[in-house]
Image (tube, rainbow over all chains, first blue to last red; front, side):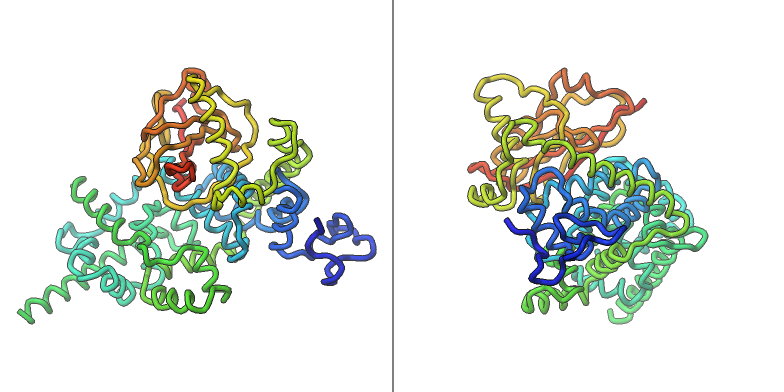
Length: 224
Length: 250
């Protein structure tokens, strides 16, 4: 079977590759698209690794490893996690249909592996939740779940989140409560550089939502 | 207090988790780079514009695409990336796992397409074959020699695993998960952290006992992974658990 990226599309170096440029059977690997590398790997049998797969992965190591490091916060754990992502990508490459970029496809694997990692490492009981609770008045009627209990639909509640919270507050709120992501992980993932990181954004978000709920109840009383 | 917090978290998790209308990461990617079909893009754009969940996912996807290590991360990212590159280069210098196990060329992708495995490939097929033989002969499946499993499993529906997960005091006796609607049987696989298969088996129940030989491999501090694939009555994979991880405390 032919190799994608042949001379007909001018991506082959007809002369020997220059120093520092990887080549295989005359093909300059750097000149091939991610999709070409996937095709060539599958055409070569698709099992194990190949020069094509190595080049493909090489292009994405930095972003996957950076992401895993931010999720795990520990270099050994990030190493295991990133290796799991690429082993899974290697196994599943035959199911890659090319209807998304390889990068997006790797993101979906990385996201899934990272959430499973957080779940399996029992990191979901976030000790910082106590700090958040202490920073807020203990008012059952102002708890954030009331936003969803009092609104007629999830869409209406999402509109409230959109209206009341800043982009960062909304992301922290959704990642922490929707994905059970620990606040330290969110701080690293969103590259928050303020002193208390995601915790400050969560406290602020909950205060704003509590105020919105009080306003909402007051307006309901007036209407009644 | 604890009960109130548990209730709060359950309600919020339910309300803020992706809904059936939410875009998958692949769809969000297609929406962002304009590669999604026009009709699907129009439908999703409407949803995403009013969905805080999808907007957060889209931001994370963009952050991932542009992720570059900060000054505090550069050294570690470089070291891990170099190790990964070495591992995958070394793996390519060895015979493929399929050839090493069976002494023959691996089947080409088209074989699995022709079998209409619908994206679920060698992992489910290999597990099913190995385990079916085990069941037919009425013996417990044997431990596999450590080797990277040649596998292709596509996530469709998720199976919720119950145990084991995280740090444990004792080696677990069994693997347990929630029964999956539409699954007539389950293939399970226990792996090393590099995803080399240690043991695999098949069951019709939502749990399976672990053999003593496998439990003997669970030494304190050593992490192991496991996953389960649900299959319908025709033997086709219909659900996957994702990879779970556990270890015995030191």
